[in-house]
Image 1: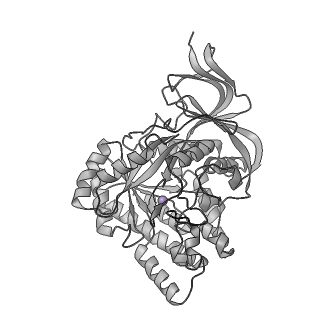
Image 2: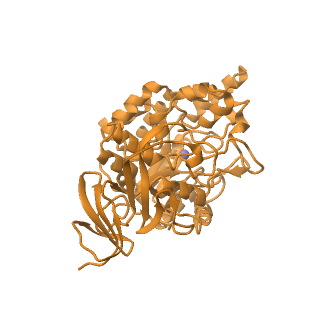
Image 3: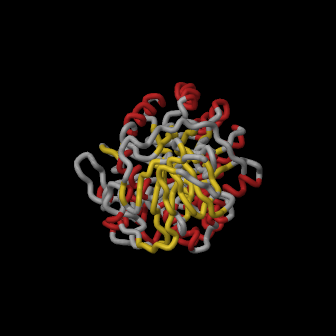
Length: 467
Ligand code: MN
């Protein structure tokens, strides 16, 4: 008779392909068995009426990221605490090369930020801002250290942007070292010119953030990204796809046989550019890049999500408080000039609940919920089947959802380090009730049981996916 550390009884288990009632047996931090199980077990949990899903994986976060003389508000402690309360047990954060700095220095810095602080498991992408010969050499070392994906920016000239030659070199090199390149797809040069023109004409209001970053800027960059990927013979991953026009370019590239993977975010599915018409003090809180789009984009994104065209739903969690403090840039920096608003918003804790709401509303299937919040990113980023999977041998990262619970999203009830959520007031069905990380009970009915340091670094393997 098997002895389990933990036996979860009678949940409805969801995977990326099926749904069934079963017990989950956990031993030595891993799922030992799934089925009709008998004990004994050190701990038993009656999960009848609850949904069990694999712990969420958020493949796009910016914790403790240097910005404007300070950093993003959430560090690895607060960010991963919020993640856990929202059912996310693994994050992939962007270690970011400083201009003139090396990839290895950036990786060391991000390890120092996370070690001993994280409550969820974590891995790193490496954001390359200077695709030098040395960076190209260091890409191989990054892969050996478990950093098997890189990101380059096609936006933010003079700060983060890589030109087409650099993007092409990174794509070519990614093939040699067995990595995947992700791209922020917006035409940075055109946007910079539109921003310059708007300011010269005295346009300072927040709405100009969106007007100077039109969907065409995303669509053009997606098209160029696909062309560069095709020239390099490499796949490419489009981060935070936001518009119907951008989605069309992803589709066209796939029809030509170019493997373009894509991620979208809850903010593009649930919010729209009307938020920029609020008074400035409120509108600035919705400034992200790409910007929120006209509502007419949302149906296309939902349909693509339902149809399996997105491999992942991530947050781009990049939090700034509403008011600046010494050493802490806030959204109020840009009240009088849209081009000075720190870009980014919190979302780690609301991602899984918002996507479960999409299941309740019939927009996506339960399996698609699992695929886009966990299994898909695990496969794309080399964590599968250790992560993203509820089956024997996988890490016992388990989320129990109470599907009947009804609640309203409210910043006061969230655990991130800033004083707002862009999703304030949205009513949703379902609540994240219990969260286990490698078998350890981390969150129980709104109480935090885990502690800083419970999260471990994940050395990732190579991508595994098919389109
Ligand atoms: Mn980002």
